[in-house]
Length: 171
Image (cartoon, rainbow, N blue to C red; front, side, top):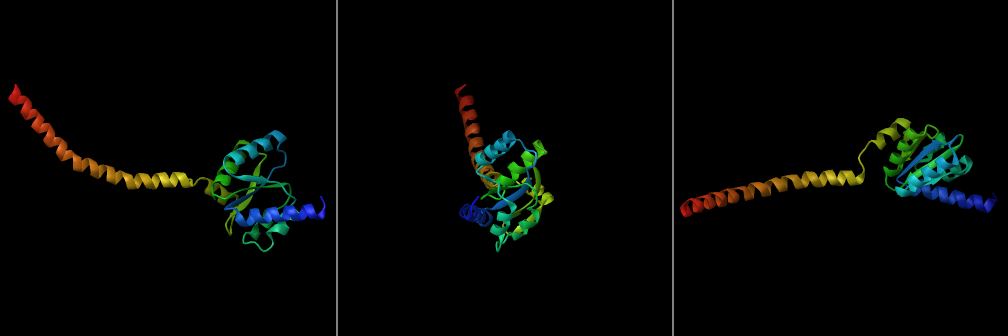
């Protein structure tokens, strides 16, 4: 790799570190090409990305970034898993690492916050944005639905009584 190519890689890595909502650093030593392809497919399907780069270039790209603490995780064969959404890359990475022990999560960052393995696992257990929106919508909609039932209930009762009286008179 010549100097120009390295500068391009450092620029790409800098964008990943500054624009991603979350970055997960993991060891991938021992992963087969098939396993790595499967990881890339899962990450792409979730709107996330995978980047393998030399640690030295990653450290250069992290210089001056708010999440520069990731430098501590950049040792050995590392892969960067990232996404704009703070949860998608984490959820896919943790699930994949549980299925394949050769992907070993070291830690990561969410914004400026540096997380260890335990922090990443805890983050993966949180509900996604869509799940939270659904829960909130359900909480907001449930009382309104109950109120509508209570409002309509007396009218339905009166209509039922009137209908029963009419049937008795007709009989």
